[in-house]
Length: 518
Image 1 (tube, rainbow, N blue to C red):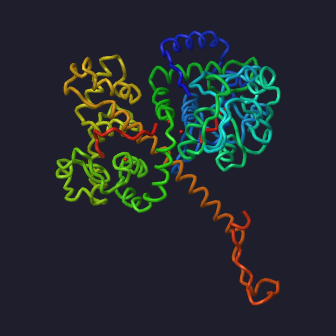
Image 2: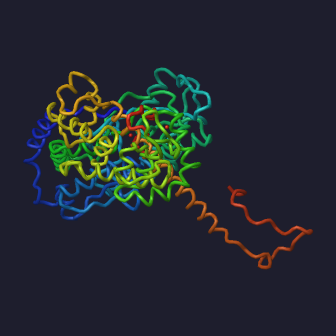
Image 3: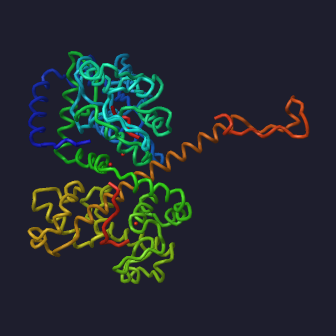
């Protein structure tokens, strides 16, 4: 996945020109036949999407997702409420447009020629490639030659169908596949992991995020080049919605809102490390349950899962961890830091977690209020890792280079410069291992995403098991109108029958999160 290298000035100029060109045809508060006027008269913006961490999902009772946040802000821009409808697959999203049940499809869908012939595309906001995936450990195909329909299964409506048809005509005449009308791309990736099917195709961001929870999923080969991701609406002579979207996106770009959302949801996407992710998830099962109550108890300002991810990055949840520089314990506190926090035993799990959490809270209170609230934690973690003064240097360097010192996306790319002489000699506090601080924070974000996704899946699985168990309540033998045969009573119903801190140490190698975008 490659995020667009956005030239905000160019986009702003083009947007303004297009909006001005379309503006005369938009009686914003006039006639209801205008699509924008109809939405405002209704008081509701209807958006159809697919559930995934990147597009729309529920997390701790809160709705999140890049497409959801953009849609929510667009509804505010129009002065209306947002109504979200979740569909199981891409084809049903376009059915909503065809039947007039949605104003916009916002589900991380890629732009292609075929779709543009029948639907109106909005501004592009990132890009992805389509990739074929397989299960780690099975034979990896080097080409599409010999792939059969019983091996390659796709979700209905995916854009990769056009690319596959072209490849079949031009290069692989024996290539075949089948469409599963009932399963989404995410569900098909799960079937690949479970060994039920050999291959499926999904977009690169969806795959990257899925791998954080299911490291067995591996990329076999690319099916397409990078493709822009956009929203879709009905294609007709009414340009009012397009003009509104252009102006809306121009505002998001001009005030850095989109840059922050892009960093929030796509900033973690990077190289995938199978071994490290698998080791982490094993520790989640084997070690975390014992420590979880402590993380929950002392994570007063942040999600306990984020505090757990920080601790794993620090010590791999080894309460006896000790670095060559003398930092120790689950949160790898220095001796001086521990003393200042009143921690008497750094190897005691509760003291370490409580002290580390308190120290992190102190760092968060020092982060300037001008930094967006949801990004303050990354600045605080940078200070936690390499020192508050050096974090300030990174902000100052960002400002000198005409970046936004309050934007984590802008500041983080300057962190490695603090270890280069031509830059650190011009800072207030001098040399710092900024490249390690950068990797430190990025690793924590990836561990956090893996942990959240993994625990959510476990919760869903347990809920499903309880649902199945509830469907088969225990029945006393006397209530059964079935005689016993022999000395053994009827067996009870079985559900199974039916179905590595050193703040200056090199960070781990884990290198953006159930996206459904196609």
